[in-house]
Image (cartoon, rainbow over all chains, first blue to last red; front, top):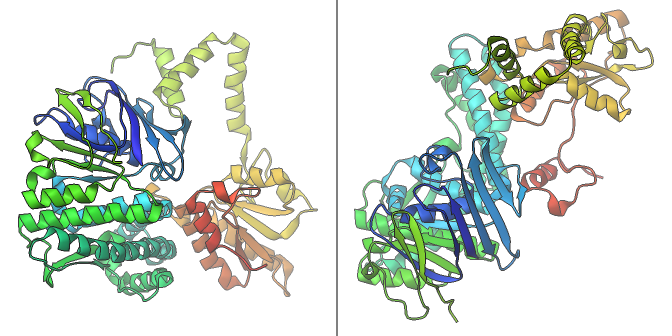
Length: 376
Length: 209
């Protein structure tokens, strides 16, 4: 999959522009603060319908304006071309596919897909469990509409149940009023967990192989799913296992006034040669693990959808040594389209097999200096 | 915020803005439209609101809207008293009535359970449903329960499902058959075009043929 063209209007600090793009490796050059990351983010918004870094959608609108509009034309191998628009104005957000509004985010995500690699990815290894859950959610949302639906229903149900538990604690509602939420909670929560378990199994295998290639010392990386409920043997048994755990925890939930069972308490265990890497890996190790996880995510998407997602590498090369830079550029060269930002050309390894495209960014002004040539 | 409107106009805008789905912009548009109406049209609108408010009440039995003590559906002798379709809202009742297929009675809950909105079961017309069923039993004397089936037709949302669970919990012990409306593929729908969530639901709720 690749982006054939993109138009931006009032997006963050970027000047309005319409660019023709194409397959291949694109280098985006610019000093810090010129808008390189914002440009990559705009591409990801066209795939995901929202921005990872934004607290509120409104923050994406250029200062002093009241709307932004992004338009992307994609070329897809399996499903044919795609035109998508994300527009945010005073009346809210609109997601359009071929000019037709799609009602929900779930129907928009997955039409075009991308994987963003950024320096924040070390948080997957060194940060709080939230960062690891976000990694799973982001990857799974692009792989399965059903996951988005189940997760949204789960959250709604959990919020209602938490309020019910609070009301019970404050003696505003009878103790038995909490039970009506549990069936659905276990149903949707169980399905979220079942998909996460499967995803982590797949990603674990892929990332171990990639990590072995990237790390000089052939350390063994192992990623496994740490659910907050004891995992059943078969995926269809998840809802039942979750319901059982909920019932067991009910007295404690009522005492503490919050729900204590479910995917909101999941984690991923990340070990190197059997030693827990979470919080303990060196920054260099964490960076390589994160890189392996992102590459594994991209490979898994390629395996399941039959198509490479667009790869967005946000200042990733600068942090790597010469050997790893070369390995990374070799690994990403399989993808149909790669955008990599850098502050100077020397940060990116010279590519022999294909001709790099060059985009420059100065104070929000984007210019295509040279077009990329696709690999033969 | 300073008001650019003269007082009576800003009052009208403010009142309209309280309506569901009407934001500040729409409220302004409606207010200006009303100002451009001729006197008779405006009078009719105002009167219609006052009249509807003073004459429409809820049915003593099923809580559907009516201008009488007991609504037409509850008074209709030809309709099956043994089957009660429980809906959240009077609009849902209208949707079922349009089908012209359902010949039983209704019960309007006037909402669904939603702790986040401060709505517990006691705020809904559930006690009245229990009383209604008990009354039917009493009138019938001994023998089989006069209410043979309760169809729970709340929406398949989280709150609608929870309300259905609650109702099933209190009605089943009475020995009454309690059913839930199906959800999944729309009739005449194309599998190819259905979203994944709908497909998953329809697999889950599949039945043997």
